[in-house]
Image 1 (cartoon, rainbow, N blue to C red):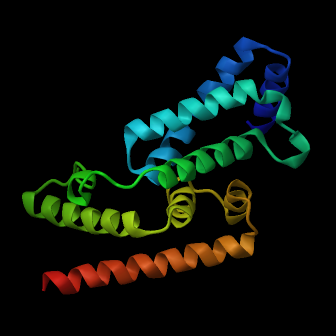
Image 2 (cartoon, rainbow, N blue to C red):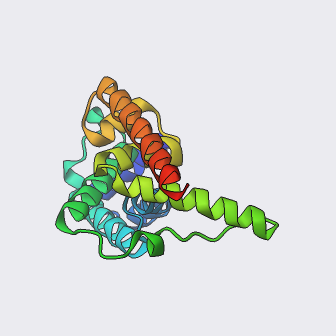
Length: 183
């Protein structure tokens, strides 16, 4: 698929709207998942994806296949837009409202436990720095490699490993602190 995306991007650089439509179909879903996991706000994630896709079209001539793949370039746009959006605003919704997720649990007890764990995790994630959240979302949510995340965040793989390690330790500490508060 990467070769297909590169071929499509070359056609987009030539102004081919049909190629752009195919590129949008390939990139929109993964971009929305990444933005949603990073921002924890579906409407904002949709705005970020719309902006990133618009930039793919208007800035197509800036794409250089020698510097990376189309999907890495697009992910970098998504991450940068998410970080910009985070810097521009402060959370306005209570964490309890933002972290309520529907559960697929069979019994009410299992559903309550699952919801509590998700709430604690989301509350801890919301307290992380935006780059840590983005890195965790790409690694655990999207299944990207450390090298791919490094390209998206414009960092070295070693720096990303450290970022992920610190983020995991911070989440663990935050969740443990939450558990101590409830006991």
